[in-house]
Length: 250
Image 1 (cartoon, helix red, strand yellow):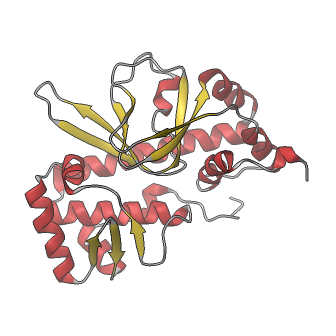
Image 2 (image 1 turned 45 degrees about the vertical axis):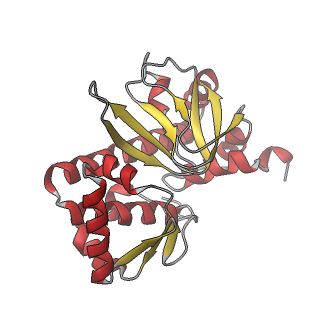
């Protein structure tokens, strides 16, 4: 095997993410492994891309957690997505002249930046990678639809249960969660900003879910005691995540 087929740990993270939603061949993997990357470490709370910016690079998460959010004129924050290793939170910058949201670190994190020109060239000449790239974007849109449904039609307990099921399923699909628990470095305030609830309401809801025996959350670790029960509470169906088991050919 040539060195071109032995991606760096940073490239491997991106490759695994794409393989979780689509099929890649050896030449596709080699192409992704040659993408130029500029890496950066950021502290929790640091802004990576500001609303209104005009990026010339796409970023993806290597380690840690990120979020996208929008600020209102009155200073309120709405978190519109959480991002885990392998995610490309500013994929939209490839085509939009200005970002309509900000991206910041939830935890300490490492991110990599890929020049737009390099991304565009790969997408133009490698159909399998283009399919994976846009399939991942379609999954993002599915996640947005579910978050919107939660804000509009699910009560507090359903919102929290659905989000916990979603994050556990996403992390598990990338090999980043254990069988019954996962690292969740989100504060109750940040969770409230994502779900449209106050921190007090979030705390009360978490206590209710703990009392039900479905889950518990302590020291940034969520433990799933009864996934089926949690899924029923949250009306969670993972089909919208379109996760492709590793090694599947279709």
